[in-house]
Amino acid sequence: MSMQMPGQNDKSMDTNMEMNMGGPTATLSENILRHTASGTDVEPNSTTPPMFMEMHRNWMLMLHGQASIVEQQQTGPRGSDKLFSVNWLMPMAQRDFGKGELTLRAMLSLEPATISGRFYPELFQQGETAFGKPIVDGQHPHNLFMELAALYDYKLSSQTLLNLYLAPVGDPALGPVAFPHRASAGDNPLAPLGHHLEDSTHIAWEVVTTGVTIHMLHLEGSAFHGREPDENRWHIEVGGFDSWSGRMTVTPTRDWSAQYSIGHLHSPEQLHPEEDVLRQTASIAYHHAWQAATFDGLALWGRNHTVGTPTNWNGYLLEGQALVQNHHAIWTRIENVDRTTDLLGASAPAEETVIGRVQAYTGGYAYRIHHGSWGTADLGAQGTFYDTPTALRQLYGDHPVGVAAVLKFQLGK
Image (cartoon, rainbow, N blue to C red; front, side):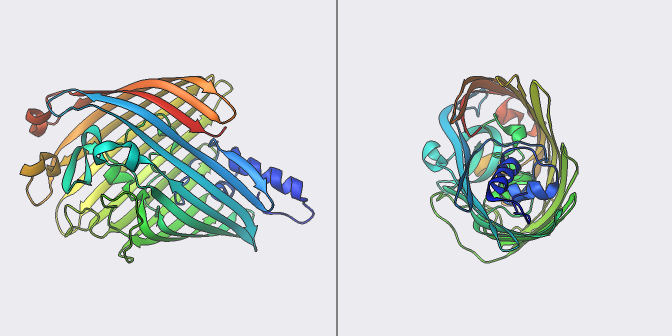
């Protein structure tokens, strides 16, 4: 553990801290203390996120991140093409503080500059706005400040922690690890179609989360501002507490983790400011390493219920990624997601309702062209095949296709 035990010298403390942050962990408490995902999210204990680490006096300094250059092309009446980059960078500092551990962390992205027109093309995607109009068939960029947070974990015993998370911009306890940071989507540069049903709160304002970790169980509750980010992706927004969430995470073995979460979001969408949303998510994540390969997988369900209406829309996701012989990355994502009348654009009715369910099947491959002291570079491509619901076939065609060439740079080792 990163906590110094009686009789433990500084060198052994530094070594243990590096092992717990950079390698697999034996317990959920050790995993929590790494804080290598956004917010207080948890991957399986055996996951080994790439990163740089260095001790500076009493601080463990860490840096990891990634950037992908993507050329996306799509078929069908609504298909379009674009060259863009998705990216994020996470610096972090940790040290012992009193009877616990203090973590300071930031998450930054240059997507407001590397994604022109305020969105990149993605068929059937919806959510948020660009230039005052709904984003249809596109995914918005992330904010420059994705997270600015302080975390404190008070150690009651070797496997029992009290947790506190404070962030003017951050990730409340709602949903799984957000898609930019989870290992099962490591080389897939596109957002899931179910993003706004599953993990869109990974950038929220004025987040306070408290929790307790007991052996394999992690319980959390959050208060935050529920409105999603506006079109100005360069600033930090403000707003009072008006939303809440709760999450239970269980890690029965080192390779498995599962979570269930529920949250009430006050007026999350600018397009429908009068609507509140009750969101539920459940997921199971898996990681395993063999001598010549590693595999990460995720099964995920997300559901939005528009409060005060009969409207429910669901998203189901199954994704996985394998790294073979440290050179070949193979991934897939399968989605079955409800879409709403917002896809109709200017002709959409004022009240949002479900209009159909879309299936999306993605497969990709990348070859590791460089593995150096700074990290890795992968060159590959992926394709997505869509099955259009009957109500939308006139707009999209029966089976549009999207293809993307991807050059990905990963910091850390």
